[in-house]
Image 1 (spheres, rainbow, N blue to C red):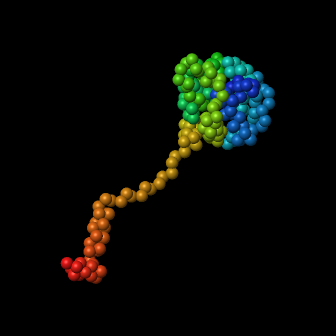
Image 2 (image 1 turned 90 degrees about the vertical axis):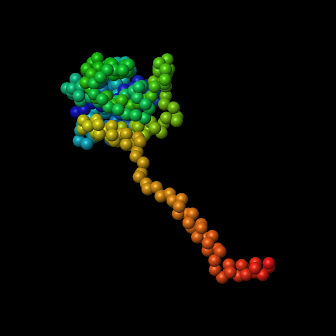
Image 3 (image 1 turned 45 degrees about the horizontal axis):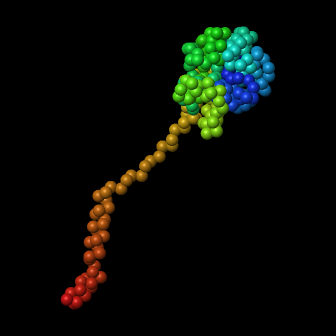
Length: 233
């Protein structure tokens, strides 16, 4: 059993916030992989299913972000899991929008949900960091994080969430590098290789032009015109 946790705040007013992209990610995993409907468990909403033969519990803590660790700790104890069995999806302020990175362990980097989980289960869990970009100044961070994704950001957001859900099986297999590679490939697909037509060499046209001029001055018609011109003199 693995525990996939999406971080966010409960309630419709937070639904489309950048801070709730963790909820969005696990919602898409549940949808794509046909997990069971969410139900109330472990101070959150939980859904069960499997990906590639790996059994998973998806959890969305409903304790508000700052207390996310309570729900995660309760679910871990119930299933007798270790931090290595836990994968947390959340918004990363210091990662560019449209980027997804994975790491294990480390600090909270100012993220209250990660700080709470670390307090309850330790730091050695897997973190799937979904970039939301930095607004540029610390005074704008609060409004940025708790603001909704802009309309112009929706196409990229949908691509990111689709890629994360599509490749979640690599996380279930414990292959974070392959997950990041495949997600990046979906977000920024490689361009098709094409052959450029060779540019015409400058020297190839000049002789042709000279040849054409020479041909215009030769032949029966040219002789006749020269004879007529001689007669006019």
